Every structure is written in structure tokens, then in C-alpha cells.
Image 1 (cartoon, rainbow, N blue to C red):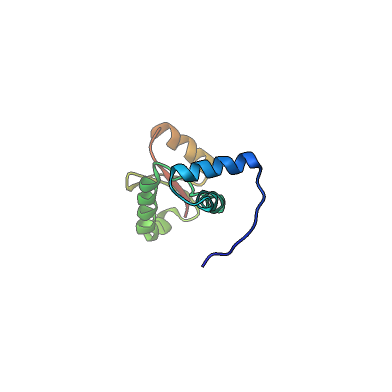
Image 2: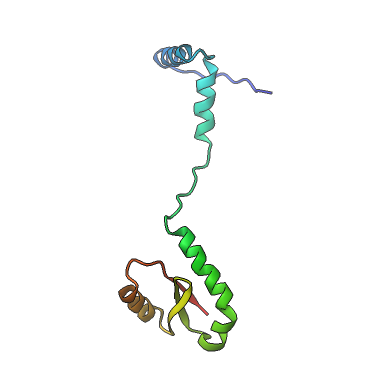
Length: 112
């Protein structure tokens, strides 16, 4: 079921809508409805190209968590390519080392 509303548009705009609808063999209301509907669609968040790789690193962290707690409690760990690559109590120091040693790679850094 459709609700009816009345809107006012300029003559020029109405002619453009009517011409567009006529070319598509559609009712004048159709393109107006589509534009209004599109105005209320939530845009999809962009997906980072490395999202799948980061998800794998998160899964590795979760799988290793009990071991990490035993050896690296209250430290930051870095995980890449499915394995622990470094750890440190200082997150900035860890980040600097990882940036240097794994430049361009996906690295997950988490506090244990």
C-alpha cells in the first residue's frame, strides 16, 4: 500500500521529471519515489582491503590466548601471518619494532 503526499516542485523540474519518466515509459511518480527512497538508505561502510587478513590474525590471537596469558600477561603482543612475532610492555616500542620488521604487512597488536 502506498501513501499519497503532495509536494511542490518548480515547473522546470517537473518537466525534467516528466520527460525522464516518459523516455523510460514509466509514471512520473516512479523516479521521484526512487530518489526519495535513495535519500534514506544508509550508506555501507567501506571494507578495508586487508580486513580478511586482520580477521585471521584476530582468530590466531583468540586461539593462542591461553598460552599468551601464561607468558605475556599485561604485555602487548604482535601477531602476523598466524603467529606471534613480538611482545613488549610498552606498546609504542612494540609498534616501532613491528613497523620496521614487518613493513607493509598486516599486524594485530593486542594487550594480554
